[in-house]
Length: 467
Image (cartoon, rainbow, N blue to C red):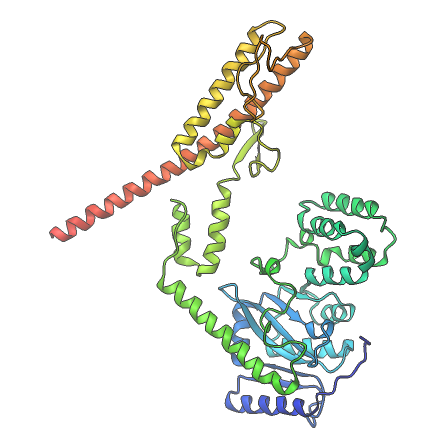
């Protein structure tokens, strides 16, 4: 799209202006402005109703500026400012009609929107990847962290590298994995370089350009700034969430206000329902943790569910001490199974151990049996073997003699190597088991505490009834 292309608002534009005038007459808190306001005849238009302005005071830290109309060739040059409310739902901060793609137009829209919001700058703003918008944001909101929509980057990459996507179907998967799964900068850099080398695309200008802008769209580089996503990015393709299903490529200027009001009413109704659910129903608690119970009474339902998910997840991420120098102790916090897979039935039981006392006891028995077999192996001479189903989870049996499944050590060194491997596996399993035992005991202690508190409350209630 050429940078100066004009979009005439036409008769439909006058219908919008008449609506804005009427709304402001009914409520002075309704704000609207038209660029070149002398005759209201055809400049850029911005408006924000009283609710949008109030919402911004509560939820305006993270803002999305949606200009989907530019990439989807909409008939109406409709843009919106949105965020997320206390239920994680899209909330509106204002709308605009932008008659051309000049940098000056975006500067005017951003400045006018900022003026309507008492000139309070957001912490972050997310937009489609676009040089003109980037220049306007940097001029109007110099202290705001500007993020490019990741989905927009993926969309543009597929368009610009269509031949590569067609000839190498696995590229898209590996490209997204490089972007989404890197945990450190070094890991990302190595993965990116490997991707370019494997697909022979080191000379692609588009990839070079998005790499240069990586700090504005790769999640790894954005962790120090609040964007309030709450996982929405994983479920929604793009920025258009508030008006999704209401304003699209076929919407005309005459239809715009009606669709705008439908979207506003729809989200207002959903917010009221979420308020009601939070106030009048209680969530199901999944742990005996007092912190979970307290949070259930403080957070809205959606936010509590997100917190609860993280809380439960911590049970599978214990801290293991890896170094103790006296003054400083170093721990590794990691989910079991991510660093290396379990290779024994004992480890499998241990990883399920926090679910019940019975499974925990089974795990302990398995570990003790493994220890005995390692000890037997150490005490036997060359040619000895292991009788049992150690270490590989496949229930194979090894015998010192016999016709089937014979294991023969060719040398003393090979035997010693096998002993070292089994001993290391046993020690690792013991460490894991100890961590789970600690977690399980902590949960049981919390349950006992809760039981005691409940007993006290019941006793007090009985005494009150007697009085």
